Image 1 (cartoon, each protein chain N blue to C red):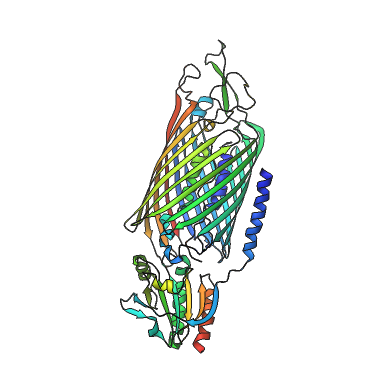
Image 2: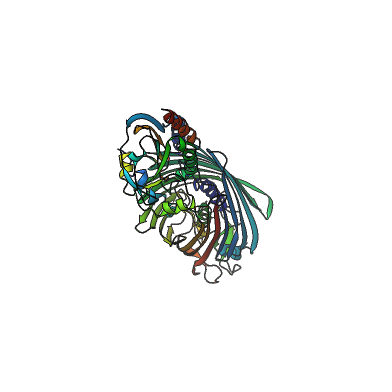
Length: 54
Length: 169
Length: 380
C-alpha cells in the first residue's frame, strides 16, 4: 500500500488554517482556563500532521 | 495497571529510538531516459525539457507551502548562476494546482532560473514524485542520473558534487 | 492552590506537545500574548511571551514567560474567606531535536506563587510514517509540586503527578486530517486545597445558618484517563471545519464529555476569522456533596464546585490579521490576533451560598466568564 495522498497533493493540508495548533501560546492559555475550572484534564490538541515535506 | 503502562511505554520508546538510528536513503543513482514534457513557464512561454538537450538539467519539484522547498530556493539559485556558463540549468517545477500562491511567492523572492507550472500534476506523476521537494538531475544526453528526495540543510553540497560530475562528462 | 497542580502539569506537557511537528523542526517565532479572564468574581490577567529559535539544523529551543495577576472574589472566596490578590509566575524551557523523521522534545516548567510551587519535566518523541501521512507521538511528564498555606507557615505538602500520553495524527484524504489522543494521569500526595471547606447540616439553635464548615478531605491518589478524537476538514474555496470529542473518567467518579466544533474562514488574503463552540458536561466526584448530612459523614469530603455536576458552554470568536507574508530578512511573517470566548458555567449540585435561606435550598450556582486573548506573532 503506497501513500494515497501524494506530497504534491498536500497543499490544503499544509495551509495554516488546517493546523490543529496554529497559535500554541494562545491555545495553551485557553486550555489552562478550562483545566483550572473543570474536573477533566488531558488528551488536548494532538501533535503531528506534517506538511508532506521531507 | 500503572506498572504495565510504564513497561509498555519503555518498550515503545526503545522501538522509536531504534528507528532513530536507521538511516533513510534520500538519494539514488540511476541511468534511464528522462521523460520529455512541455509546461507553461512564469514568463508565459511554453518550455520543453528536450530544448535543454546538451545541458545538465536539474529538475526541482517545489511548492510555496513547503518549508524545506522555500529554504532550498536561494541555494539552488546560487548553483544555477554559478554553473550556467558551463551548460547547466535549473528548472523549478511548481506542483500546485492553484498557481496564485506560487506566483506571489516568486514575485516576493525571485530566482534567475525558469519556473514551470505543473498544475495538472502530469509531470509529477511522470517522475513519480513521492517527496517534497524532489530533485532530479539529468545529464547532457537526457538521462536521469540522480534522484534526491527532500531537503535538509547541507544537501546543496551533494547537489554541487553531482552537478560538477555531470558537467565534466 | 491545589487545583493548579494539574493545570501546571498539563501546561508543562502541552507546552511540549503544542510545538511538535515531526519531520520538520518548529519554525522560529516569537509570540506576545495579553490574556484576561473575568468571571464569577475572579479577574486574572497578564502576559505570556514565547520565543523559539533554531540553533542548528537539528536543534530548536524555546522559552516561555507567563504571569497571572489574580484578583479573586469568587464564590468560594467570598463565602468562606476574603477577596485576595496574588501573582503567579511560570517559566518554561524546551528543546526539540530532529533526526530524520524522529523528533524528540524535552521540557521543563517552573511555576511559583505564594502557596504553590510546581516543577514539571516532560519528554516527548514523535515519529512520521508512511510518507508523512501518519505521525505517532508518545510522551511522559512528571510534576513535583509543593503545596503551602499562606495562613500557616509550617504547612508543607507534596504532590507527585505523572502523565502518559499517546497520540496519532493521520491524513485521511487531501482535505481531511484526523487525530486521536489518549492520556493517563496519576496524582499522589496532598490533592486538596488547604483553604477549602465542606459544609454539613446541624440542627442546633446556636447555629442560625443551619450548617457548619469543616476542611475538605480528598483521597491521596487519583488516576484519570482521557481519550479524544479530532478532525479537520478543508472546505472548497479555502475554509476549514473542525470538531472533536473527548471522554474523561477517573478514580474519583468523575466522567466528562467534551464536544468542540469550529469554523475557520479566511477573508481576502490577510484575514482569518474563526467561530467556535464548545460543550462540556461532567458528573460529580463520588465524595462530593454540596451539603453533607453530618460532620465527617464520609472518609472523603469535597465541596469544590469543580468536583460537582455541571456543564460549561463556550462561544468563541477570533480574528487574525497577517501583516507580513513572504518577508525576506529578519521578519518573514507577522500576525495580529484577537480572540474572545464567552463561557457559561451551570452547576447542577453546587449552591450559591451568598443567598441566605434554608440550607440545601439555595439557588443552584451559575456564572459567565469572558476570556480575552490579544496577541502578536512574528516569524523570523
